[in-house]
Image 1 (cartoon, rainbow, N blue to C red):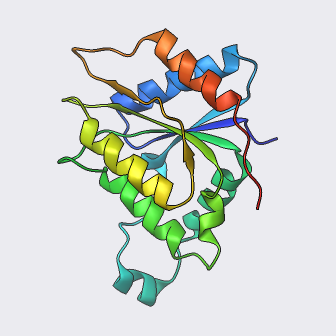
Image 2: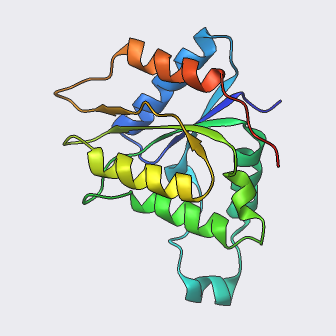
Length: 172
């Protein structure tokens, strides 16, 4: 059975730990929750030449199925040079070339965004919000930015999960 909430981590460090905290909070609310560590996937860096020569990696299909089965997502991503981490950008790029209907993964899907970054992380959250909204997602207004100097509060994580729990996937 697919989880009620899929929490994606775009790093194997602090954002993975943050993703686990979101999953724990969801389970405490009676939701099924799973964490997907994007750094463990066998996805090469997206390159149109690689795509033209080698086709779609098998991991894209399974990633698409996993994402499509979960009605709600949280994305935990560190800030890389004022933007998205390459593993997340590449995964979205691969998903976008799998077929005409790739936007169905995002359209109407409730999502929340969070970051654990060395600085405030406001740029990654802004860029991610813009990209997800462009793809049709319903991004929760509240977002989470934390760092070593400003650790995430359990109450903030729980509030974001609660907001997601009250939202439903809008079917076309």
